[in-house]
Image (tube, rainbow over all chains, first blue to last red):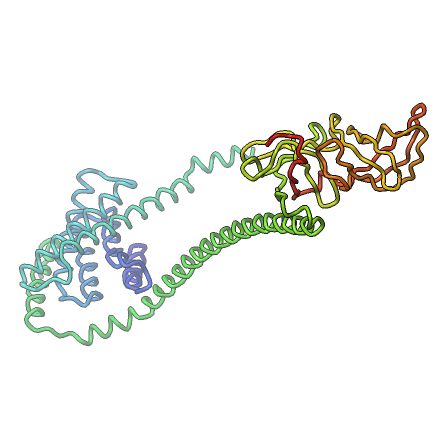
Length: 167
Length: 268
């Protein structure tokens, strides 16, 4: 349920980031890919790949591109991220940073490959792909920071310290 | 009954393949305007929201920049106002000096022709009893030249440099000049000090208060008939009358003086 809510929020965010008054590099950010990274904690590689497929398809739809390559790229990215996260047992900030970087890089590479195989001219080339990877990784860093702060704030150790201070 | 079950990973691969085929078909037959319209309709409020946030951020940023510019401008204007205030003080002082010089020249039209107008650049009227002028030998100032202020004689030049001259004031303890009290025939000697006084008068000379004391020129420095000051209450020391003199020229207020040519005793 949380993942579904996160999916919707990410979708809305991805749409909103294209507003003309915002910083011009922000539309390169792919919050939906962060949701795919988040599913890697709960699902296996196949499940993550399915969520990547859904995220990629939606990205294709809202980007008004040919529907399909984004889905394929998302599925590949999801599978790779899930495999790497499991193999190296990543947790904490490293999970988000490496996961988002890997997801964006795999997704963009696979998308460019798929589009090239279809013989269609892509709407962005390597520079756009690089911006996408950079902005998505930056978003992953932000999520990692927020999560760490949240955990530190709600940690039992901190609660104990507060109780001891009141005594 | 056996239900065929598809493995999820195989299903994923099949879906991807289907998508690839579908994408290829779309690439050959572009279309999908209804979908584009739906996406545009859905994304419109979100884009508007994003624009609103962006505009707010831009306004904030612009406001911050404007504030910085305004503060910098304020600082610049303050500095400029300080500079103008300083200039105003200097100009006021300059104007006062010019007025004093103008009055001085008007007060002594006969002497002004051969005299040198000089500005007081430094003064030590309490300890050394001297003032420093901005004119010197190059301007025709000579040793022992009498120095005249608007209200009366001030002293004589005791040291001359090329572009400066030092004046010994009449209040200097070593200063002396031949003088007489207007209406009192005998000549006396005006000597300096904290209280300048007229000495050397004949015994039992009666001198009223507030009479002008003027130069006689017999000492060879000061021209005759120029005002030194006014008399105060005279007193007797033995049989001689001592007349304290209130000097007319106040060195503390003098900004411009007239340096007269020496009376002829000193070499140039």
